[in-house]
Length: 118
Image 1 (spheres, helix red, strand yellow):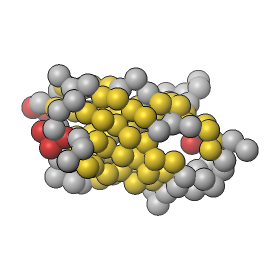
Image 2 (tube, one colour):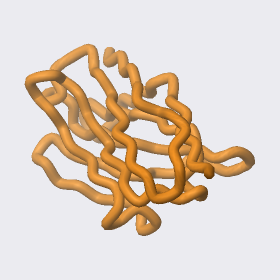
Image 3 (cartoon, one colour):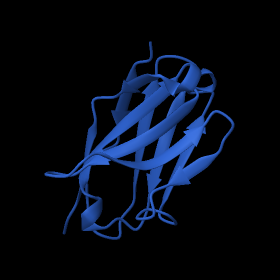
Image 4 (cartoon, one colour):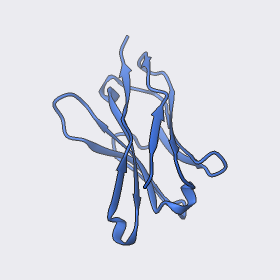
């Protein structure tokens, strides 16, 4: 079992920055992959960024060069640094953890709202 608690969502102006945090209930190093997803109103949930236990990362094309996913093993926390935010980044952001053989166990946080608007 893995509990995930997100924080850091807020209202921010276009061009601004925000850092989301996801605190995990167990050692991040024991989790195969951590990711951030987002879901905008009326749209499907989409992958934003993923980081594996060996540090490999991948990003959605729409956020490459603007967002960075990272891990602090000492704090068992995953971050999503978001820069140059755009109105289309507005969504509920969810933290996700995958564990087990074949990444068969899936865990989700409750989500945190990010609104980009002037």
